[in-house]
Image (cartoon, rainbow, N blue to C red; front, side, top):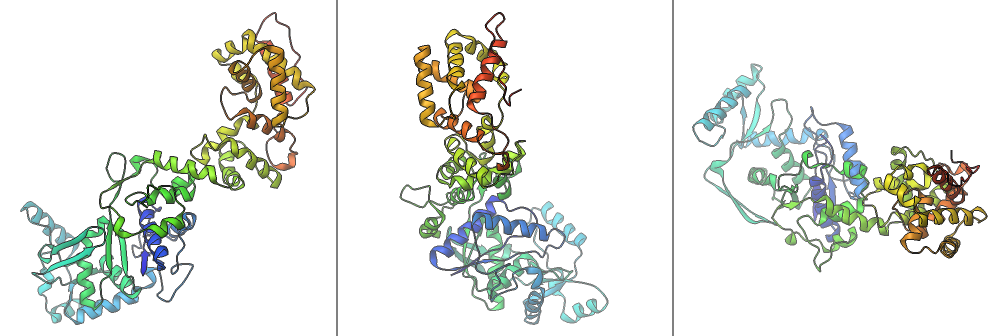
Length: 514
């Protein structure tokens, strides 16, 4: 089995095309076949090496390695169409010699006029065959006079083209509704339908898995296979990937490219797992499976022919699963750009990364994407006791008798306390409970506000020890300075006393807090 993915390097890799690449990869890996990457870059005006590099980068990120293609080489290269022009010219000459193709001198203006006339008359906009009737001598004379013709394939008349689609079953076309397609343009570059047949045949591709928008190309390609003496591959046309409104997925639905989802903080294994579920089911009621297991189970016969909807909420659900099971050290390293984008400048060394990795446990149940991690952990790196007190509801809650006693008692208990680990924090909380008589939410909500500056956030058993661990980090760790619990409690108590005229004033501590 030999399959291929053949993107055009004219932009970013769309998730619909990424799913096509994935299905090809899964089939090859599951069946012990060969996965080929071919770059279809004959559109010289739009193709760029930058886009090619971006596509290769996205495929690498997704974990879709290839056996033959750019960077890998192989015995069926070259793997860029722009480097295969001599092959297309050679096969075009063979078709001309066999009278299976002919030169076409029709101008673009003439062809457009024909098309508009056919549409106005309610006829299919087919090529009228103007140059089909030219003799070889007439064509040669016009070329000798300096005209530059295209080359058209001569479609046989009154013939049915039938193929069995591995997804859709038998498909039938009648050649009377198929125009003679241009196979080589006047500038010498091959047209898609011709180049893809030459390439797939010479690269010995056995299965062509692509989007359903290519179904109408298939009869032309089968006729070309026949004319050149090649056996056509097995075709499988995948249903389109649609947006939530059941229109083709496009920019108006939000992110559509692999690069955009990577930038938003999705993990590659999550995007791969989710894309595999669009139009195919691994069976057994399973949805969350690693890529090697997806490959083991993948079969074209189980691919549906109804359009699949790309639901980013479902993708976020899949991503949460992979965030929970990912290596915390990996997540810490991947999160760094998002911290810097959020204005929390980090250049952590090993010690700093180790601390961030330990803090990732506070994000696993509350973030969908890595770009949400900085907001979840912001309480570690930014602390200002006046911020929660600017909220009128929070101020009123913290000025209540019960909450205020918790604030004062907590500051007092922490004043002589060593840095907190989980057990020491629980002991301090119990001591504050005994001194104030507060318990449950009345106890722990004020503690959260005092020590994190937030009214909600991670479990205090995780957050509070992390604050003091961070406070002990040296500046060489490459993280912003973290204010410890002792300093936070004292500063908050002082800030709260400032809000109550006539109350007993608590001195502002000598700390890193303004």
